[in-house]
Image (tube, rainbow, N blue to C red; front, side):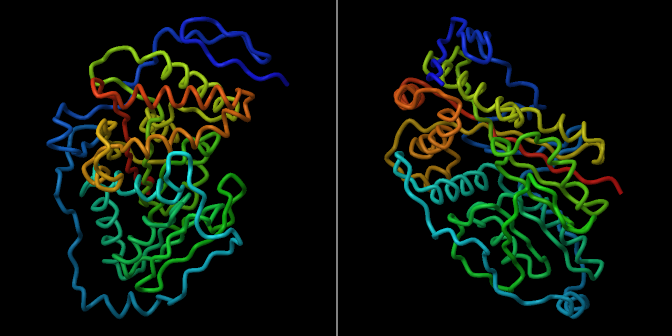
Length: 376
């Protein structure tokens, strides 16, 4: 098969599969319910219920109960075990051309997401677990596509009465952090295959950054919902793959070309790049979850200055150019598999990075979060 031509931003490109795709304008990114206007740099995130009530920043919704009274009940059913992986993959991963290893990229993104989502991210999960524990029952949590396992390990170490199961197909990036309470397991699972857990097993299912990994995302949510208890909490955290100009101007030609290539290459794998923008609609469309889920979105600016290291900028809610480069490089194999010329893609990627980090421009990506409860 001859190499696939790189898209021009304003011409129709003929390919062996189709003749279409004119990229003179960008699609709208306003399909997700937006939060009230706020200053991104002063107030990174405020959760808003999809209807009217608000989840105020910093507010804690912990359920109060007698710790001493329940301790014996909760500890009685806990089995202490060492977290192990069934994978034979060598620990660690090769650095990308951005200079970051895949593990470093994932851990920096985890730091960034926690920084911009703030208390609402953790409190929504922990308050739900507290309600379960208040009944005298241990909770069960599933972390899908755990990556480095940092989110799962942090939760297990802060929630001694929660049994956490972290699943992935690749353990090369897994963190070596130790389990404090022996309440976490790691399991090699291909989430696209039939799943063998008992129905209504988990109190919380956490899915993060899977929209570019899994075809038929809505079908995945339906299948996972089978294993969620009635009233259980589904947590979805997904990043927008596209970029938006803070000034509202059209994106430069290299960025539009790149995004056109990404759209077609991922669509050929039945992966819809617009999934993050439509998370709330997808959850509603499942017909499984209660109305009025907690939903929110936050803009994450691309940092122009690189004096700070990636982790420092992540804690400040900014996307470091090295992390940005690593994110784009993660897409290259899919584009190459779609018969785009590798050398041209590399050149186009570098042109995109140059445009995105210019000192006189401001670009951002959106991060979307949905917290939905399964109907009882």
